[in-house]
Amino acid sequence: PLRVIFVGRIAPNKRIDSLLRVVAFYIKEFDNQIILDLVGNQHPEMISYFDELQILVADLQIEEFVNWHGFLPDQGLDNLYRQADVFLCMSEHEGFCVPLIEAQSIGLPVVACDAGAISETLGEEQIVSQSPLTDEDYLLYAHLLNEVSTNEELRNKLKEQGFRNYMERFSKERIADSFVESLEPVLRQIIYR
Image 1 (tube, rainbow, N blue to C red):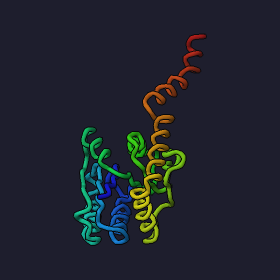
Image 2 (image 1 turned 120 degrees about the vertical axis):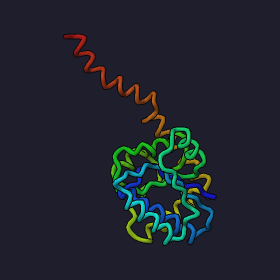
Image 3 (image 1 turned 180 degrees about the vertical axis):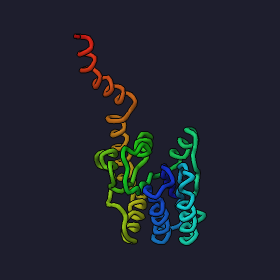
């Protein structure tokens, strides 16, 4: 089956309801060979939201296609990333979304909504579309997931460009270099005082 992963808090702005609807549309439009792995903490104040999501899963009749993992330690999260075929993010707003870079760092294709800093974080030549509002939008994302899963050339391009984005902008070495570069003017002032 197509393994889709999302990593983030269980909170309304993450639009997990939209992820669930996309899975339902994928099943209707293509087949039932899809699994959605949801990884993230549930804040005690968000219990009612989680309950709403459970009701939606039942209403959409997709219980067997959704895995709730809660918080996972690094090794467990890494294992899920490596089992996944695509990372799907439909958040309505994000700052710097670390899971997008985690996905790119292992060559996992990303399909995401263009919200907040998502486009800037993902870099060039990635699949970023408008925020979902209607059933037509959920259907579009279902088609995007299918295209990524069936089009090897597209999938490889997304993997390569995503990994390049990670290496050139967010690898540990690049961040360390940027940090040192940003300190140089300050250090020069201290040295020459």
